[in-house]
Length: 134
Image (tube, rainbow, N blue to C red; front, side):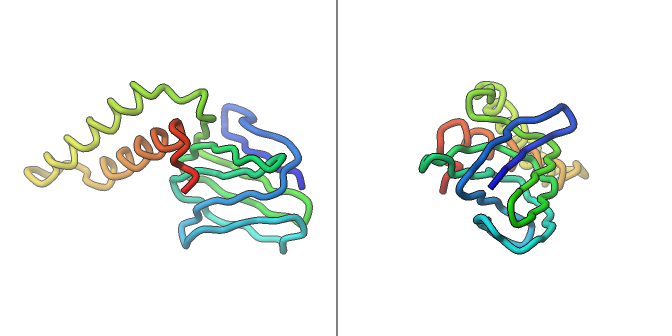
C-alpha cells in the first residue's frame, strides 16, 4: 500500500509499504493493506513504517491519519526522520521543559504547554536513537 507523511512544509515520506503503525489519541493502531477506511487523530509519537521488512521511524507532533484500503495519509503538524533530528537541540528542549514543569508548581506557568514540549522532545530523542520503535 502507499504511505504518505506530509506536514505544512511538505512531504517527509512517500512510498510503498507493508505496514504503518501509529499512536492515536485513543491508543496504538496498526494498518495493513486492505484496512477499512478510517480517520484518526494522532498523538505525539513515532510513525513506524515497515518497508522491505525493515522498520523506519518518523517523529510526529500530532496530526491526522486517513486510511483507505490501498493508501495511508498522515497529515502531521511536524514530522522528522531520525537523520533530520538535531539531538542537541532536542536535549536542550527537554531540559527546558523539565525545568518549566518544576517551576510550574511554584507559579501559574502554563503546565500543559510545558508538558507537551517535554513529550515532543522525548519523542524526538527516542526516534533519533531508534527507541521510538517500542
